[in-house]
Length: 577
Image (tube, rainbow, N blue to C red; front, top):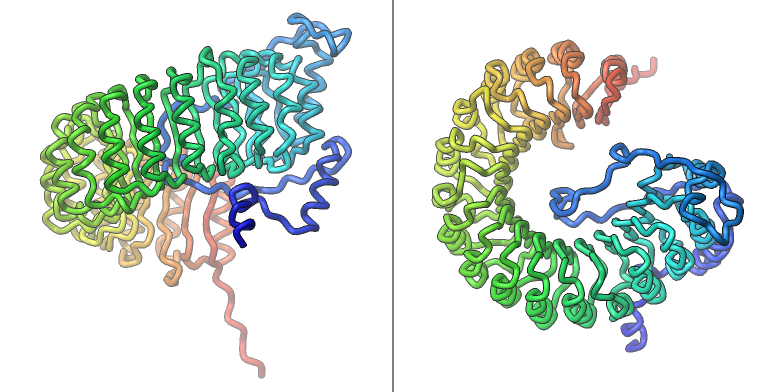
């Protein structure tokens, strides 16, 4: 029994049936050129941080990258020169490789996530690297057959010395992969972003295989280790390596259970990373002692701009140990503590500190019920004129809290996102929030899901649209408000043409509901051609006939918009005889 427990860290979620092991051995020996392409979707495990809400280093988009110049053909692959690296024939091989995987080749961006790559494919990819000398981003995530074979690729990374972003999420990396990756850092001196998230093999004391290879000359700025099942030994190895990562600007350890000792070791090493701007510790099991250790380390990372401590339910009641040192973070722009079970005293402690956070732009205290009783105090202490994001969903807002927020709406001149979902008091009070909004309103996201909205509330929303107060709106979420009458929807869609920038509209019902779209569908159909930016329309759990759905799909197909709709009216069978 003891031996199985000791081995759990190494095997973890990588356990497979005997048949899986046999099949995967066969697949490892088969190149993609010898088998039919099988693209199997993977399920991402989000970490409430953002991907979904995401700050940090911006992603390189394929659309932003241009094709590299083609040069002359190399005579021999074993001795590639700079001029020969972009040859027509060589780039043709790259195109063939990418196209057989259903991907489009780009000279700066190699994106091969979810391609079911094998070890043999890595060898073939390695032979193509000399023809990709302009490569800046390499994405090999969600290919879980690559584990144990990464050295076949890393041994040739010297051909892509301009690489600055490498993503290897969920590749079942093994200790030998970590060693090979660490050794290869010298070959890619410009590397700035390294994402190893969702590789449980990094944990159980294995992370040292990587950290022991790090050299002080590296330029790494962004290290992501989300959900790698890091142990206290791994966190210690990271802490010891931080002096070699003095240029680090973003560190994401979300979804890793941190011990008190591990947290103390980590935070004591922050003195070596004075440039740290983003720190993400979402869902790390942080409690009062963790917050105390973190607070004491703030004096080392005064450049911090973004901090995510969300989904740490044990943190409730411990904000006082952290808040006093928050005063040192004079550059803090966003603080995320949603779903932390904050107490009323926690929020009041934050109220005392907030006036000193003059750069604050985003504060997420959503899914903390205590906010409902303290919102008025909080609003008085925040730099409202510069706030651009204020999530207050599921905060148990009271009528007085709603009134307090309505009073300051005109002050929130830069507000781009307002989330009041799952606060029942918003119903019958929406007018108070909307009337202060003027034509210069910058609101882009308005979420009012499950707010007990009435027909009158929607009529006030229509009025705001008509006077141009929501002209910059890109997302409108009115889902789970079944109490709105048909007249409300008809009137709203009748004025929806003013929402020309709207990209997402959600008026879904609860799964238990069963209402027909027929009374207001004509108004929606008339409005859709004028919503030129619409890319997603969600009408889940509304009842449509086949003809009604066909009409919707025909209009939406012209703008390549997605229709989310899961219910059709089916004729009731006639009784026999």
